[in-house]
Length: 102
Image (cartoon, rainbow, N blue to C red; front, side, top):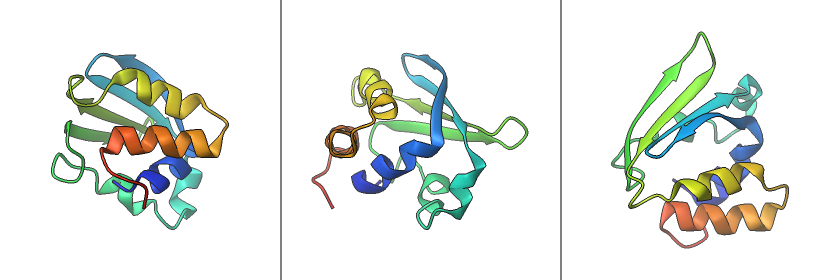
């Protein structure tokens, strides 16, 4: 997952429920107009280390991420989705993605 894309797409995501290892996000369907929206659909354990699986419920517009909390600290998800600061969002996304900025 590209950290800058993740930081940008956060504007379309809200935490619906979060327990350690499972994050359920409410997805604003306006995200479908975003040029990088396909990256959300492409999230897999192969594309994001620490991710165990994903499920999208079309009826509730929720995306559930199952993740390894030892690899992906849950508090970083919460802070990423809450911050209004774009640069801080990129920093958090870089930490979550385990990569450098792209």
